[in-house]
Amino acid sequence: MRILSSVAVRLLSFSPVTWVTVEKLIQQVLWLVLFAILAPILGPRPYGVFSIVMVFVGFCDFVLSEGVIEVFVTMTEFEQPHAATANLVAGATAFGLSLVLACLAPGIGSLFHDGDITRLMWALAPLPMLSLLSAAPIAVLRRGMLFKRLALRSIVSLVVGGVAGIALALAGAGVWALALQVLVQRVVEVVIAWLSVHIQFRFGWSDRHFREMLPVGINVLAARVMIFASGQLPRLILGYVLGPTQVGLFTLANRFLDIIVYTMVFPRTAVGRIELRSLPAGSREFERRFASMTQDVALVSFPILLGAATLMPELYRLWLDQRWLAGVVPAQLVLLSGVPLVLFYCIDAALLGAKMSAVFKRMSTVQAVVMAVTVLCAAPFGLDLTCLALAGRPWVLLPLYLSVLRRRCGVPARKFLLPPLHSLGGALVMAAILHLPFWQMPWFDQKLNFVVLVGVGMVCYGLFCYGFARSQTRAALAGLFLPRP
View: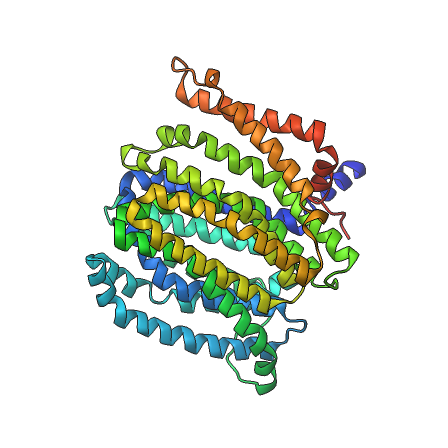
């Protein structure tokens, strides 16, 4: 019994990477469940309208809250006066931006010829303040590698918000179901975050602590602005040029990519970034840790990206109605763009781990500018060509990222790129096998055929890992569990 108890304790002693993966995986599964329930009720247009509103409201939400968290995590020392000062500055900024958004809402609604946009912006104006309230406890939990508490917070809040959204959708509220869902979710997040830590929420001012945060804060917040712009500007431009329905299709396509990134890429890079903080850039150990992180991420993300792109037509036909089928090709193209983006996430983690927030800011600016130019040039030609242009964009930027990594962190491409390319080759072989015509059996049940295709893909890539990437697979699996201290 004692041996069995010891084994059980060891299995439950998940590593930080595993807890972040569990959090993101359950988040995305719950989102898929909610989308499966709400999409047939609402259709693509409400999702498009909501996405346009979140371009404006989400800017304040994402940039301020995530920026403050990033500053706290990046700093070498973190004290209570840091939190109090940041709360005061960011709180005043969030309040001012919320007022600006409320004043601009009628004009933005007129620009897109939709009164719902105006009313939604008024209703969601409190989101930046709600997000800011949980920034300090989230930073404390991340710095302490307490990802289990963060996972529970995210999962519980998403469930509570989802129940509220479904209830309102069934009552015929339309796009307001999505608004209520995000508001309830954010309130629950704030409550659970502060119950998870022992620090007090307060506003205050300290010149010394403000000066310590200012250089990092400027770089991180500027980088967050650029990251947000590169992610949201396409929706804004497409909404103006092509209308809310096309934005809804584009949003769903990007959501599939987000699911893979947040479950297969972000957990490892988030923990890897914290691990790299204690190592000097250019050292052999820094290079080894970075190569291990990139190898782990590529091993699991590349086959999922290519496999999902291959199976996307079958998934749309099984899951969604005719209103969504025009989004199949955009979804495939967006997923294919994820291959180089995986390497971008790893390089960003290295730059932040090496405390090079200024370089991180410049690279984020380049991403945002190239993204905006790409969409502006391609949007008049339709959604498919826009997504094709966006799929080619990260491949064009990849040499620049590799050059920055070599010059700033002392990690040449030849030192880490071969194992990811090896995994990409296995993923391409798997995708080619799934494309063989004899897997398409019209007399076979469509749902069962889809399950068979998923199984074939898993077996093919599993055989590749066993035969050609056994050591990489063992190393990745070894990082899932840590012995109990």
